[in-house]
Length: 308
Length: 266
Image 1 (cartoon, rainbow over the protein chains, first blue to last red):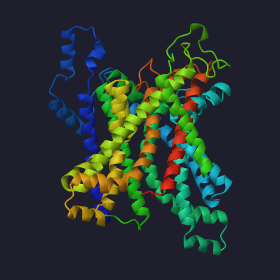
Image 2 (spheres, chains in turn blue, purple; image 1 turned 90 degrees about the horizontal axis):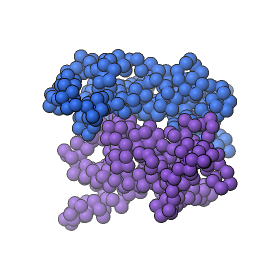
Image 3 (cartoon, each protein chain N blue to C red; image 1 turned 135 degrees about the vertical axis):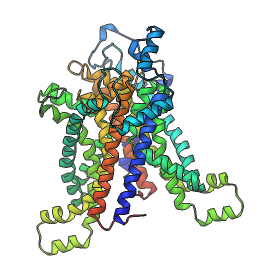
Image 4 (cartoon, helix red, strand yellow; image 1 turned 180 degrees about the horizontal axis):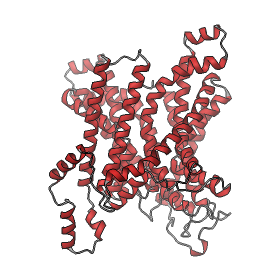
């Protein structure tokens, strides 16, 4: 039963990934805009354009380009950048670690903020504390990265001078981007944790734990929070997409040399293979993390019924 | 509860009126005053001037117009298209539904705003392309919701009765299904307006959305980030505008969800 479910989900994921890469390929090639023109300028001679087009394989029929692309794909070859002539895979490798660092740091920020907020507002439901923290949560959801980022730069870099404005030089330059990205996630998470905690706190075993004379902290953290985090894991998986998309904007704000910045730059240069590579890398990560979150949930909680 | 509702409603109305004023007032948001470049806010111009000497106040009003027109058009298109496909899929079932579910799965398996960024980037900046890119992304939410809602009420007595009486399919959809599923869709639309406003500003911030000299809050923030040390008002004005508007729309959406008492189907 469980094995069937895993196999089914894996096949589903492979299908989704295949569809995404196909859709992205065709979207990028169908949409108007000629990379050759961008590379050589509009005034370039027609013969030069043709030579370049031929050498890059852009004069082949689109179906043939697609089959070449797919063939490369199965050999982990995503093509070469039209501009820097670097392998796309190599470019992605260079840029992925800053993005991963940023993502984990902001995840850390989000958890640090949201877990206490969520617990406090669930325990003191309808108190001023609860209202206040939920107001903060809505504020956090509503403030876009590109407003939050410049605001943080303005206050902490320019006025207070605590952190560098941008770039990637050690921990101090990580703090502001991680805060920017983390607060949005924290807002969503704290609302989730609150509602999940509220449900759990009604359970009999919480009352029993109290009756056994355990400390409040013990009950809340080891009995309630542990179970309340289950639905949060799923949401966390789904929110990773938002995190990755937010990373694109946040990386631009802070000139953080990650996948997002690479993607925006390549879009502007119409560097097809690199854009494709970025999109595919991001969607692979997204699908994979969702899959893992699902498996974790199923294995953590046997009560989850698996529909076949 | 009443009090919580009023302030957001007031703020949204304020920005909406600003958007309409942007349509009718003879404002000159592109007028360049060289002697007022980066001038800080004062009593005459409450929001100051930007790096080209353009009045930020007037550009904020034009930005409101941009935000609202993009958001309303995008949400309208996705509402109609999404609901249409969702109801059709659930009603006819079979191959239509299979196809719809596959499409929804693919779109949901991919973070929407990223697709919008790629689409807008490749289509090129501009108002129409921004609308297209955002609509392609946001119909899915409506479609999924409409499909689920329709599936849940499809076998109710009055619909079976209408079928037995030989009512045409489109009439059943319009008169018997749509009124029952419309309220969650409207709530979805409210939240959707907020997210489209953010998405449009985000695209413009990246330089992939509304093209200069047209004003958008996103591109105003983008311009402002380069002058933050000398002219923080260039970021603060549009930043506050977008924050206040989105915050209040989210509040309104929450309020409407409470009021219409729709169980969040999780």
